[in-house]
Image 1 (cartoon, helix red, strand yellow):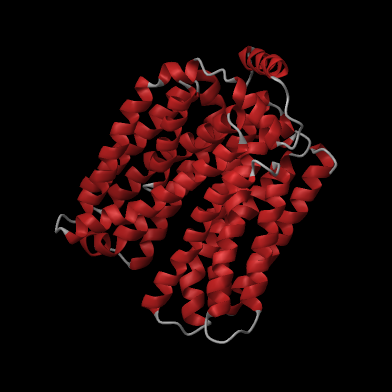
Image 2 (cartoon, rainbow, N blue to C red):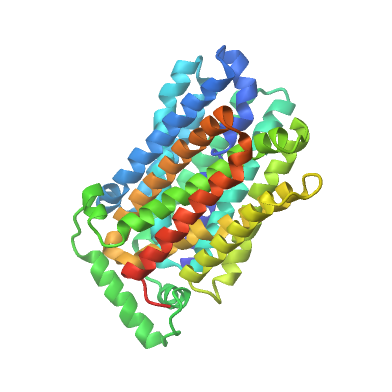
Length: 416
């Protein structure tokens, strides 16, 4: 039954990624019908991001009240309804209105599922689950392309994804008893191993798991943002998460423009080469799942930061052609791969199971804030100074992230 629930969560992560890249793929076809400027897609994107921040901040309260399974089912269902709403929206302003539940649904399921997996499963599953997100994010544009190439138009692209989400909602509803009765000894063993501890025998694992369940069964009040910020080490992990997501989103959003403006690559070629960054993340997370069997979460984070730094440095080396940029982007993607899932997975170990949902919720909010704020900030830098500062911008964010991680380890982590 444990494996069956894990399969449901894998499907949920794929579905989480499916809508994320849909708006960008559909907008060139949507914009003429909506009769709005090209840049107005940013408004829809910001509304979705704002919704995800709100729902992520509320995830602790909602999870305590309804449970992870019910919250996940409701969030996926809300996303399904919003996607269908996109497909029938008659104008931009209705689209903007529907973007509110779209974002609320995405943020709720993201925070709840990440914390659930961090508590109940070993680190390798967190990496592989985020690899599933990458698969979903890659498949979404292909589904939209299928609808467009068959003359069905962009609305059917959204409807296909909506139907997939509805089916998944039904699956999650039927799986609710599995979420309720989740008590897995192997998860305790895997979690201990993932944190670099010596493997424990089955008797010790049972005792630790029972202790976890007893802790989780006690009445817990929502912490809120102020309560989270008062926890020792919380500020560091939140800033770290903000920086990571700022790096990931800025890297992906501005890769093509950097190659065109700095390397002189054609727009068509640059668009294709930019996808190598996402390929690096997806492949890296598949690889990270195996690496977590040998290395604990802090070590995986440091490995990711080192590879990310190497990728940025490679971009700064004046090699002929665009070799440095392409190799650098792939390495940046590979470096990003283990950081997000390993930070999430280490949160219960740092702060305790009873406080992890609140902290993960605020982490998700910081993640969305970093994704929403920092890429436009670089846009201003590129427009008013030079786009050549792209790798330097990423380097500054990386240095801040590394500093926050080391401060976190000194405050609440075990000394290495």
